[in-house]
Length: 459
Image (cartoon, rainbow, N blue to C red):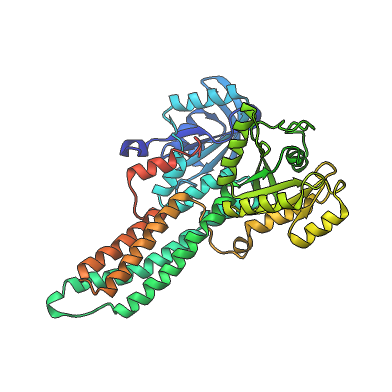
């Protein structure tokens, strides 16, 4: 956590990615941000300009011109951090950026720490902790769904749900606490029946939020999808076809893939992390056997498995045996029949009858891949997300919700056992504590350090 002295500092950092580009944006924030920038800026007097204005001029070290720039002004509290803030747009040379930042530091700024701009925004009441965390998620969003989930959270969708729950519970908590002051009079300010109804309603909402985490995790981190099957079933060919590039080595020699190869594909706005694995078979080759073992481990931890088999080299007994093993594994899987041009028509007809959900493709010819993509997208089940329901994507929020659920269950148990008001109040306070942890109404220095240290410098 930053010290009180550090909070008063004016901080500076590069806000755009490192490296050469057309422009770079250097950000300052703090009470002296405009003053410090004005000391090195040749143009209009920045301290006399209005907020949300842009000014052309030069950054100078004495008489030496470092660069021609555009300076954007944000006067407190009308800025991201609610402090005076300046954004200097320079040319994208790393030399220019370093010279400007060093000049600003010599004039009174200090280099920002990771996440310090966003932390100041949180501490100054710009938004709550869940919204602050969504800023980092938004920066790293690499698909439509992860972008939408982060944007919804940053704009307060998730926080609104939590705040509403907490406000309802606070009312009953205050009534229970009030009863403690009148124990001798034996009065009841909070109806136990109404409290039970409220807690049961809260539990339903909390359970729904907890249940959304599996989908939220998929949206945020992508779907680990293992392509599994016998050697020469066409796993590497399928990966290459999905990627539209020669990522994996393709050969007629069985056992070419000794380890797993992984890459990401965006399907329907969702990131799938496809993993091409070593072929599943008994082998005396030491290296290949290690690959087979790793394949089995990857299958256990996958969110989805594509069971790929060669129509020209697999019989119904083998397919049924493999499907039985996959069902016992408990991981969702898609049956994918490859090399449709080599399959016996009667065998294909029998397969469609016995396993009507099989997807028939030709990875080599890139035939029917859209049907396969549609099937894997169906299994992710984005309907809940697309209907606007709140989705939990953050493991910290999930953990706090699980603890909230247990505390609410303790409240119900206390009501069943007619425990005294002081113990009932403790359980309610604990529920409020865990809900407050999500939005930052309850925080510790260690928690804030852990969250904001993961942000990039400049954000």
